[in-house]
Length: 437
Picture 1 (cartoon, rainbow, N blue to C red):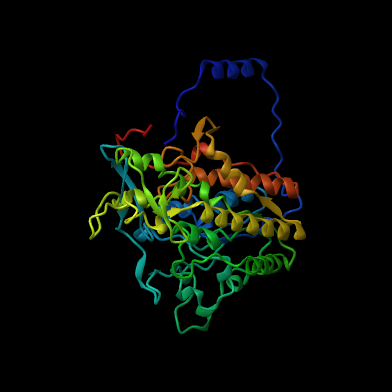
Picture 2 (cartoon, one colour):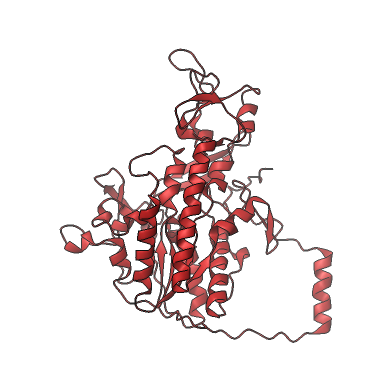
């Protein structure tokens, strides 16, 4: 969906004509890496680094990750080949993902899971999937969906996270117990990008600030100690790099699409009731944040055993796992702010470049035009976020790649070219489907 990308205004044509008449001399920028060395670039991070999109990791998303885009620009300035642990073509759908297959009569998206050509081989002890082992000799993109900063030094983490496990040999090889930080720093590198820490608060928030398994927020002191440990390890041999801040998770479509007004419109304007994080029941307000899965849960109005309709009666409120109240939102924002303070201080101590992803992605709450394309954080029609409402589209990853590039150029005096955002798709619409208004 690349809106307004096939039309040119008369004004634009006139401007082009005037340039043609003047025949200006355009001096092309000479490629240079400044004080950075891009000869071996590695990308450290989680799902955002891997190219995860639409609720899954699959080959097309991997090929459109921001590290792939960064590496392509670095190659012009001395960078070497960049290797992402791609799923092979026979298993191109990887973990499986969501596909937009149409819209309901009321305009709600119909999302269909893709379940063919997967790379899933079984189940790990914790009930999560295992995947076909990656057999390539080289890896540069170490993005692991689901990994938290607090996992990077955990021995045997590959047995809890199949995305990391596919990088490692199988048990009983001792190398299968290798922790993430040791694994990514095992080979020499000259430049790195680091985007870790998102999941240390995002997974908690995405469950409505209800702790599920290991998803409680990472203690701030623990986060600080680990982040500095990672940065110290990455810079120990003189490598330079760029770090990214943690996005404002509550500004993503996952938390902004399902509003009180939209819910009330479906029930003739009736009051809705929620269970707060403290366990109390009260009327919902416009300030409450309902999570995206509530829209597909199809539970509003359904009676419980006592006959009280779900969400429409104080004796059957919307569960706390579906909503973040004001106290929970303040808690999430406090962790994000604290984590980002730690990230920026660690970067400053080593002279690293900083891409402020929090600020950049938050700006799309208001529609912006990039390369003639309208981009916003609106769900599905905004071009920035994929169908899961948290991860980015290829176009969104191109925008973040440019944020990384600008930070690198500013800090190291390099001259990496920015990515043409218009070359990358947004949400993929089924044939004949109209863009929702």
